[in-house]
Length: 114
Image (tube, rainbow, N blue to C red; front, side):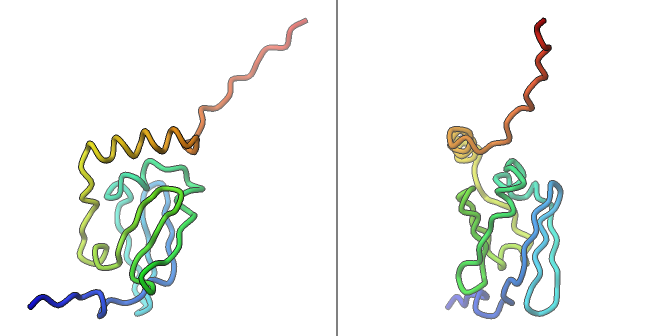
């Protein structure tokens, strides 16, 4: 018989995703920090979209609606990075670009014509 540890896992209280790290504060007082590169969708996303998260599964998971990404507290605690294959990630990158939400290139300054 397999028993899920999900019911025994602490709940997520707060999430912060920077350019380098994913930091998750838990209900038992721990803060778990993992490299953002473990989650390619997060590491390739605009910071504004990384900041738009919501708790799912009674606080046992995080969902980023702008990124179509879900991560469980169980996987974070077990040190499991994303298992997304390269072809799936490539499709996601194309989808993300088509949504027009990827950071745009900085516009060049135009010289004023006389």
